[in-house]
Image (cartoon, rainbow, N blue to C red; front, top):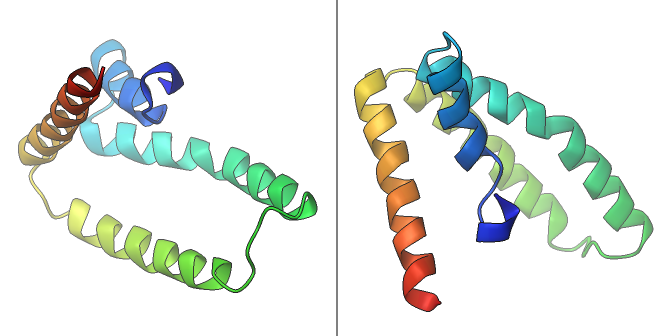
Length: 102
């Protein structure tokens, strides 16, 4: 997925829904949970290397926490078919934008 400039969730979520019995909600949650540890390790590594702007980082972290929580609350209330359509539309749009730039 990184080859195309997208996150692993763009590959993992469809794969989980197609090749397992997971519904879209469970596939999204599983993909997001799997990113937690690598994100933490990457954050610590970049902090130790001096690559984190501590004046900006707390605001980004707070925004990420609020956005993730709010998005989760909204996401579980959306019909699975609409959630799947939104995810597919986003992936299609990003793919087309990438092709146009090439």
